[in-house]
Length: 417
Image (cartoon, rainbow, N blue to C red; front, side, top):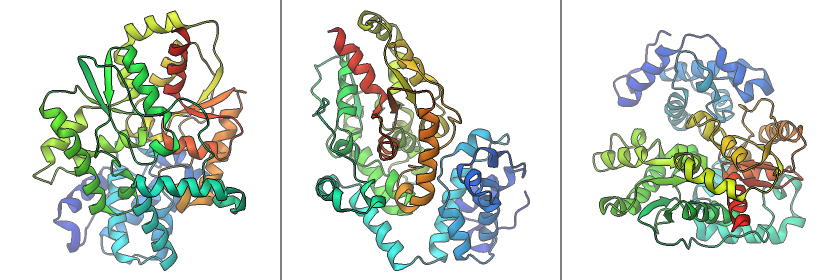
C-alpha cells in the first residue's frame, strides 16, 4: 500500500509506525472473512480492510467525518483479523493511532461524552464500581431490559473471599483487577487454591488494581498510562527483592494488555525497562498450570471420579488472538475429566470487548446471541470462559451458568481432598 502521510504526523513516532503498518497491507481482504462486524453488516467499511483505508485517508490529511467515527467505533478490536492476515499487519496498533487522531478531529455528542466519561471514571475505581453494582442489583426489576441485563445477578454462594494461601518458597503475583473482585470474586481465590496445591504461593499486591485497558480502549491515553505506571510501581518492589517468579493473569483481557506494557511505555524513559520486564514475566493462568503439568496431572488423576460434566468453552479474543494462547484451557479441562462440546466459529467475538457491550449495545447483543447459540448447540451443562467481561456478557443472555475455567479445576481438586 502506497502512503503519503500528512505533515502533522509524518515525522512522529506514531506516524512512522503507522506508515510501516499501512505499507505491509496487500489489500487481500482475508481479514474480512473473520471480522465479526463485517459478517454482521456486510459493509466494507465495517471490516479491517475498509477501516485501514479510512485511517490511511485520515493520516494523509483527508477530511475526517462522523462517518469515519461510526465505522471505527464499531470495531471490537478483537484482533481476529490479525490471526487471519497472511502479511502480519499489526492492525490493532494502526487502529489505536487512527482512533487517537479521530478523537481530536471529530467531536462527540454531549451524551456520548458523558457516557464515556462515566465509564472511564467509575469502572476502574472499585470504591465507585462496587456500590454502583449493589444499587443496580437492588433496582434491577425496575430497569429497562437493555440496562437490566448489564447488571449482574448476585454472585451466589460459591467460594470467594481474599487470598489466604500457605507460604511456599515459590511465589507469584496475581492482578486483582478493577471489576473482577466485585463481579467474580471466586476467580482469583480459586486460582490461589489450585496453585497452592502445586506449591506456589499466590498474592495480590495493594495498589495494583486496574491494568489500564479500560481507559486505553476509551481513548483516555494519559489516564491509561497512569494506571499502567501504578501497577508497575506496586509490583516492582516485589520484583526487585527477588520475591516473585512471575505475574499471573486470570482475566485474559488484562493479560493481553499487561503484555502490551512494553510497547505502550517504550518511549517513557522512567518506565520502559520496567514495563518490558513485567510484560515478559506475565503469564495467563493456563500457561502457569501447563508449565506445572506433571504435578497437576498427578493431582487430577487422584481427583477424578468418573466422567465430569459436559461444558462448552468460549475462548476470549484476548486469549486466542491477542495472546495467541490456543488449546491450553481445553487440554486442562479435558485432563480434569470434563467433556468439551464442539463450538462452531470459535474464533468469533462474543461482543463483550471491554466496554463495547455498553457503547455498541445492539451489535454486542447480536454477537452475544450468535455466540450463545454456538455454545449451546452441544447441549453443555455449563459454559466456561477465561475473561470476566466475556463471562458477564454471556451470562446476561444465558440460562446456563457461565464460569471461569479455573473454578472447575479448583472444584475437581477440592473434591479429592
